[in-house]
Length: 132
Image (cartoon, rainbow, N blue to C red; front, side):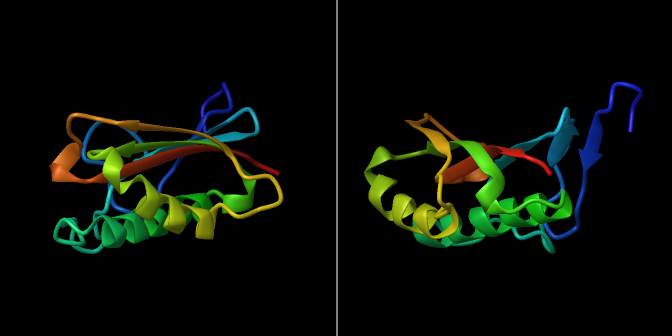
């Protein structure tokens, strides 16, 4: 923890960052989770062979592992961003997303189609949660 009250969140239950960033950062009672793609935490390899539903399940599993490492649950998430390589996948991703973010107050969200995602991923999700 720094003097500014900023703390990195790191867990082996989610993939290690592939660049100079943390899986998440705690600051000011908030948790800022980096985007997760469908990497297997044990192997670092992509899961799903291009199947967007398999990828989405792994992304959500990874994101929940980071939340848990910070002492949070999906019900504390207040904002997400969903990045899709193909917006035609929206309905399939949305159905799986709804299974995880199904609290009394679902988070605010943006969903955008992007030209490309790391490692050829079809979906990436990041989030912000309130701690405590």
